[in-house]
Image 1 (tube, rainbow, N blue to C red):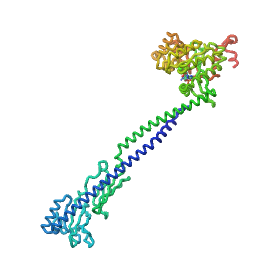
Image 2: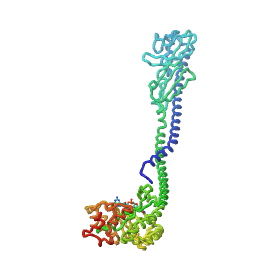
Image 3: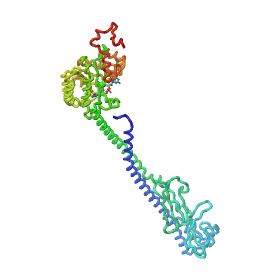
Image 4: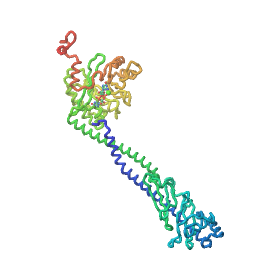
Length: 537
Ligand code: C2E
Ligand code: CA
Ligand code: CA
């Protein structure tokens, strides 16, 4: 039987997680791979652009140097220097052009003047190539690339490239801010650096290196993986939201399946309990609040398990109503009522016992046959029976229900409308169904107090019941103040914990024995009204 616990919820969430985790993980994996692939491509193309830029700047510089050489200006004469200065002017990348001797000392530099003496290149060696590339760093730490062209005797024409040559805007928006670039010659000397490459970024990075095919240089571009991932951030969010939604939908679905299964489980348990006849009526007394007499009782179903635990009807009646097992349960209850109360009700024909019917009972005549079969031969007489129909449940066929109630009434039984005031159909039922008694629900009895306003509903119900010539029972009476007010309002019958809760058979019989006047009481009672038994006790 369902105990209120969180196990089904945890199970549903666990299953939903298991179902969602694999596709979610798969999509995330694909997204990440896509981002990494795209990121690598972007870094590669950025590196390629650096290399292309370096290549074209160096090519241009060497071309300029060759033009100077071929024009016969590869010396430090005044006219030559003018030609060098013109070449610098003309070129986009070249900052200075000059001539360096075999020792690497500058002989002249344009712009700059005749006697620039700084060492700019390593001394010329016999096996040095005609074309050379080097990096120089000035006193301020600014680096430039130098293209050299051997012009004979160890003398070299050199062109120093501007800083801006490689300051290009490479890479897409989402990476630019995080990207780091590094252009080096093959010997490892650094020409250009952009970004925080030297700092430890503290996380895994993606790196791409592209080598020039023309010159001995390479460009390396890196970006942190998190920046690369940001390409798919939106898809990432959508996927995560989607997965979360799927998680909830699946969890709810699984929960419903678990519920259905556990209902199926209960149905099986109820079947077994029916076979073992574990359903028993408990009896809650109904009292006449004017005289204090016992009027009878309401039979309330309990499932008394083999181990003695008593299951409340809320845990099995709804399932049994849905499954149709309520018919068998009611049948067994009525059989037990007929035997439990046989002696008491035979000797006290004025006592009543109420039996609760479900809405389903009023869809078929079966209940009439069951009642006849069980009570037809006594000892409990039809006149001692009351059948309660709850207003809480919608009746599918009110006319049919009225006919079935009419048949029960024609046997001599009474009918009652239970939980009056709580249903959707309202008091229209009262007239349509043909009932003898209305039972006013506990929620209207609870607020009864000396404040007249809070009694208005009960007052109205009483007026209505009286005008329709119906009996009234107040349900769920828990204190004497309520009794007092009910009396004032004209209610004479009440049921509630104030008198007794639903009692197992033996206790109900004992209670009845103590409350009911016995046939021979008058004869043996003492003057003060005590019975001899009470005196002995
Ligand atoms: P109900 O027919 O309205 O029965 C009255 C319920 O109110 C009982 O709960 C009873 O124990 C409780 N009650 C009575 N006096 C007081 C009181 O002063 N204070 C409080 N707090 N409660 C009070 P129970 O026995 O748990 O039954 C619950 C419901 O289960 C019943 O409500 C009825 O709708 C259904 N039920 C019980 N037995 C059967 C049955 O044999 N057949 C059908 N169809 N339904 C049944
Ligand atoms: Ca009832
Ligand atoms: Ca009730």
